[in-house]
Length: 203
Image (cartoon, rainbow, N blue to C red; front, side):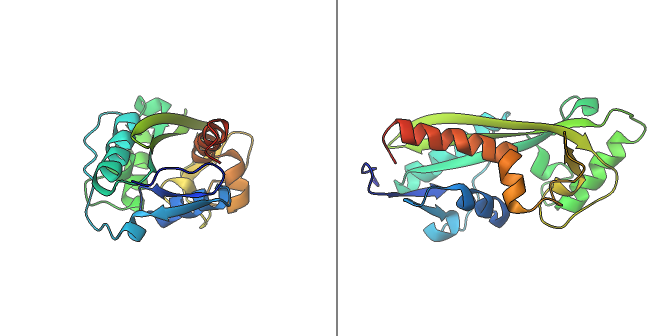
């Protein structure tokens, strides 16, 4: 078990092998945290996300890694919630067009279902499940915006190229990583996680 030693730095596993998410989070982490991914654990299997909410899926992933590898870790589950689609795709965002779909297919399905709607208001929501020495704490972040019907930008992943955050005229995929990390749903949740670690004297 990797117990945290105050002020000496520690390893923390981000229970994902998504390079885009890892790079976003790595950039924001304090220097005394050695951030690892599932690739660093040589874990090549899949963690079945059987939850019905983002919170449940995030906890399933963090519990699996902690229970099987004995390391302090956190996991995220993120969803795009579109008002006119009654909150869809939500918890099914990553596999909206099918279990083996890719981002382009997910986007095409969103466009098809949104056709004819004037209201394209949406929000991204992220839940982080932090498992520290067997105790679980959750952190949430969200950002409002709109869906557009053409892809713009190449910096992001998932639905980033069709999501314009409120107050901006660029999609997430047109923002650079520094700009995105200032406002994104995932960065908001991560900032709260880091504040928690600091207040609990883990940093």
